[in-house]
Amino acid sequence: MARLVLLVTAPTVRAALLSWPAWQLLQDADRVLAGSADDPLLPALAEAGVRWAVLPGAAGASPAGLARLLTAAVAGSGDPGSGDPGSGDTVFVCPHDPPGRAAGVPPGPVALADALGAPSGPAGVAVELLYGSTGLPGSELLTLVSVMDTLRRNCPWDAKQTHESLAPFLIEESYEALDALESGDRQALRDELGDVLLQVMFHARVAQERADETGFDVDDVADGIVTKLVRRHPHVFADVAVSGAEDVKRNWDAIKAAERAAATGSAGSVLDSVPFGQPALALAAQLQRRAERAGVPAELTAADGAGDGLGAELFELVARARAAGLDPELELRGAARRYRDRVRAWEQAQAAD
Image 1 (cartoon, rainbow, N blue to C red):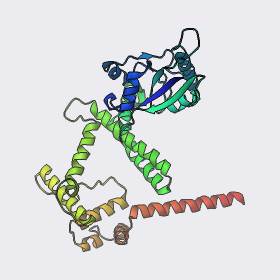
Image 2 (cartoon, rainbow, N blue to C red):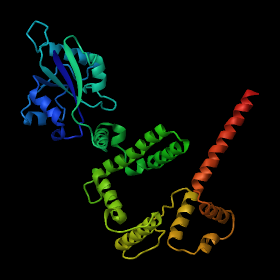
Image 3 (cartoon, helix red, strand yellow):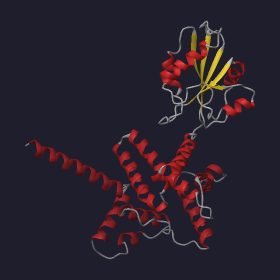
């Protein structure tokens, strides 16, 4: 009986990292077919002496259409005109399902296997799925980089965006992710985090186009945060000993202070990096946290340094919330959500009368 093996590969994994069973299969197969000449695995196969051919008509075919093409190809590997598929192995290089499959990209392995009727397959043909490589954690980020490059080149809207025009989306998507988190909808949270990640990728792609010293790319962004995390976690990446989370916080603050001094020539203020563009409750809470960790006297927080009035009362209310272990911004957002629900219930009751 002939065997048709759908060899599933991850485009972000180098061909050299294919599993040994996959390489054995490729070396011993009677024929190796691919759905597109653009498959990144093919040059490595040719270099290793594995002969391959593109299956005519495969690009852009539906799963059922591609199944028919493969069935015909396997049947043609036996005696000419006999319809006998023979007994050899045919390997079809089948990348993982791409998101939103575009024209010219063959269907993915699961849909194709179903169309072929796996495992029994067409008459006289056994169909198997072999996963020759799987992406390492984070490999889909490379796909996102590629998609972002394509959009920047080919989409008129994406091509004209700047850091400034994208700024509102950075704020908006962050709040939508927070809203999904508070709602408890984990699927929505995953989707919204993707939108936040897109903003990071988009800004990095815009910056990549600058040829002066201000240019950077997504690898520079990743390298910067990796360097910072390693430097600020000496208890993990060096030989510093800590007794608990509070020690970690103190070390973090000391390292940040040293970084500020190295960058500016002086220690500056512990409040220098607090962004004043954030919502007022969150701003007040962050100022108080930073000041408290720096040893600022508690009476300064109580007096708030801004005189009397509603603002002073709100500032002290933030301090009370923090003393109770609560985040004032999230508490007010929770109260606002409950108020919204009460108003909607009232509106529905009014409409029912």
